[in-house]
Image (cartoon, helix red, strand yellow):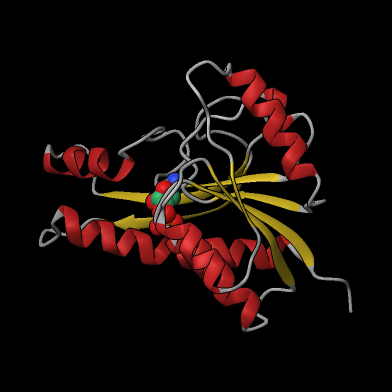
Length: 195
Ligand code: GRF
C-alpha cells in the first residue's frame, strides 16, 4: 500500500472541515495523515481540534508591519518543512499570493461555499440567501478547486455540488445544510485525488 498522503490544513476558525478530514483519516476512509494544522489566528477552535488528536500545529500570525509577500514567503518556508502532498484551505481567511503558491503548484486546494463564478469572497452563504430572497436564484452550491494564483475563490474545479434553497429555509438552516454538504464534498474530493 502507498504511504499515506501528507496533508497540511490551513484554517482561521472553527475547523469543522478540518474535523471531517481528521475523522476520515482516522477511519481509514482516506489514506492520508495531517502532518500539520496551520492557523493565522490564535485561540481558534480548529487548533483545539488538532491538539486533541496530537496533530502538530503552527500559528503564523501577521503583524501590521509585515508585508503580505513577506508573510507568504515565511509561511511557504514553514509549510515546506512538512513536505506536504496536498495543502487544504479549509476556512483559511487570507488570500495567498504567488510568494506562497509558487512553491506548491497544483497542490493547494480550496473549499468555497458557492458554485464557480458565484459569490467569491466572504459571506458567500449570506449573499446567496439574500439573492434567493430577492427571487434571483433558487440554489447555491459548494466547490473544491485548485488554487493556481491570487484570484479569489477561482481556479480549476475538482468537484462541486448544487444545494437547493427551499421555501422554508432560513439563513440558519441553509448554513447548516451547506456545512454538512461541505464536509461530504471535501472528503469525496480528497478520496478522488489521494490514490
Ligand atoms: C466553510 O464554509 C468554508 O467553505 C469556508 O469557510 C468555512 C469554514 O468552516 N471557506 P470551518 O472552519 O471548517 O467550520
